[in-house]
Image (cartoon, rainbow, N blue to C red; front, side, top):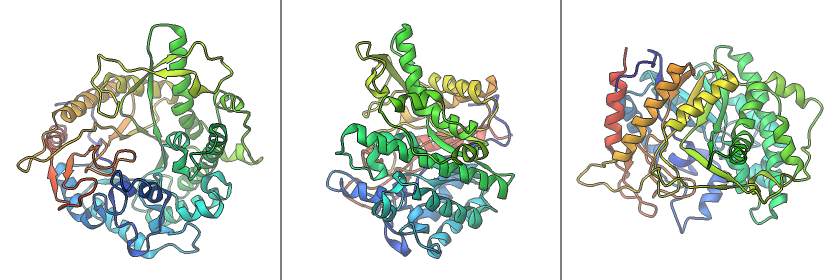
Length: 459
């Protein structure tokens, strides 16, 4: 695959996150996070965070595989509880800092750019128990303290930062924020949207801090970008698609890039009879703290139809149905294969935000897989990568400023909802949900495809 629009400095990468790949859940001073606690509740059903893919003990091997693959970037997250085990310590955990220094230094030795996510679903459970986590305004100060520590410690050798991964996902699955999922739905959403607001404020403060301390750095959010299509050519289905896409994805980007909360977002909160708890200085904080690039997690298109019998004054999630398109291929978990949707979605980003740099922070295909004679054949994943990279290339030819592509995931890891059965990796890890096995790494066919693609597009 020779790609005409890929510049010489383009960052071909891959992604993981700390709690999904590291394991070593209590080693060297690490505390417990809400992600740990959520996983333990399902330990009898699927893999939990205790060992996962054991990147903590296999990091040297895995980084060597990244070098062999030819990666130019690696998007990963720092575990908040490796740095501040309970979240409220005065001083950071030195062993946690030392671990990430080793990772970052080795990546730089291999000429792989670290793209570092500060927070990927793993707030310290200590803060949730102390004051309710993100639902409380106190969380802003604790996150800013944590982010300040990361910037001071690693800012000289990390150029690309992501603050918070997929806020919208946490709002919908609000137990990821430590909110009791058995609460009445309105109460849950009100707490979750207040938590979302506090993340916006904390993030804006960190955007400003980073850009002032390291003016050559890039910092932004990692947004779950659901490119949403109407089920029919009817205007009411088109409107349903636009409303969901705006509320779920573009609101997060608008706040980060433009520094203001859109009217369409607060209009929906009014339907919950909910008014955000704010402070007078918040308008200035949001305006002064904006992102200078975007991370987008893009997997598939979402197809919706309007519930025409539901009145407009009902909350947005009650006003549409999600539709399956039988002309598309789907994973066992309901996500479709629709690569032209990526080009369309990227064009929409350019329409709204101009030439802002865009990093595709996640994009991948999940399968149930087994190793046979030391090999893993994953032809659909190869086709998925090929199709999406081709469409990304066309979007770049259209003028979209994509600077990096990081498929999810580098190695097989703990899927948040489906354990180890739902495999995304370019590299197979020899374990199951309930058997640790050897944890040996095996390169899949998709690894070799991606390796060849990267090599063929060197300049």
